[in-house]
Length: 553
Length: 57
Image (cartoon, rainbow over all chains, first blue to last red; front, side, top):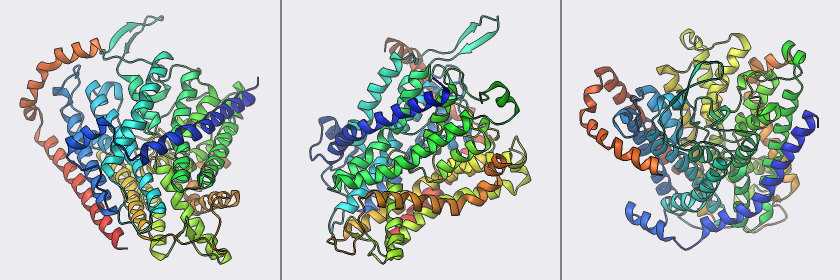
């Protein structure tokens, strides 16, 4: 089998698996978030945190609860890292420096998982388990909760409430994330991933060299790292490490897990909206962009350019031989299409055009399928913009699911769309215009610019993967990227919940001859077009200066 | 699980060190800690204002 056909089989098997999961996991998640009954463990949780699960919150109340939890989480994870040397399972490790601790706390609470540290030599097992892994669950659940709140905004009539944030959060963790994580961790263990609490072991290799092997609770963190589209690796080299991604089978499984919830959530949207075709239209738009991107990165990387790759017939620089070019390219495309910071290869080693596609994936706002929850609410915002644009073009009434899209709704949707580009482009410009910050670039010219652009794109879109080739371990970079992560996560969430509140207060407008059908293939195509055109208009000049210039010349 | 239990028991004594933790933090790192905590407060203050603004929009 040629590498091209092997890649095609690899991608096809993933698409089939996601298509099956869409129906079954989607139905399960729909039951989990809409069930009127509380489980015993959930009731105990509500009693412990002192909330009435049957009392719903307004959009303002929902937002306040979310922001309060996130602020407390950042302070908690920061403190845990600073004090880790004096806590259990320290194994001789000292506390993390203030700048790295703050950057990491913001990074994990915002579902970004940008890492300016080497996990195995910086974080104790306690920090990994009680700080970082916990936030992998909580930040993922926050994203799904916001998506569910927005769906309720579309489906409720003249309602002042959006649900209860604490109930949504608890249910998503207890009923969806924990069971899937336990099942996945067992599969990962069976496939060869490590899971222990041992300290490091010094071994002599076959060549006589000394090597330190670090164990830890890897499998349990690895599953939620990918399931929650988080991406923070236990080891510095993330999923390229053989303990974190031992073989080709675990690589397939990790990619599948990354897309599992994001591709299944549109089913929940369709069911809650009372029209499954609405879910199909959204997942269709997501799949069209995702498959195109995955195929494009594979084609660009499987057809090597440059002297050395052409001579040896393969672009193996920065890739693991056990995973291959297609396994690495598919992983890279899928992580940048979602908000996952996991990596199996150096994105810095990709061809200019291959690197452009990876950067573009994040610039799309990570909506295809995007992060858990954030992908769906991002795509629904784009659907609102599409309805408005289509309304302007053909004179139809801007409505989506029976809700009128008026000037105020459009202001919120437009502001949502503008937040991330503003952060990416302002941050990149600030870094490039300062000689001191420019010195963090390990390459000059277009490639160096790509490294800076990628870093701000990754942080602002809460992706977390790094292009590499950029020394970000300074106070300026830790603070600048930390601010991008926090504002890139929470300003859009604030706008989405405000929009959800406005939509929920509206009644349902009956469909008329002037209503644009939003469950058709045509509408899905329009959403894709609007996504591509708006993102291209926003980012093309920046892409042209870096990765595109490098790829075309 | 046995490993985890043993490790927790063995390391239990280390919790006492928390009492002396501030002594191992220099003035510079204390100011850095304070700075980052104030920055967090400022970010969430801005977000709270943004939430109010978005409600009124």
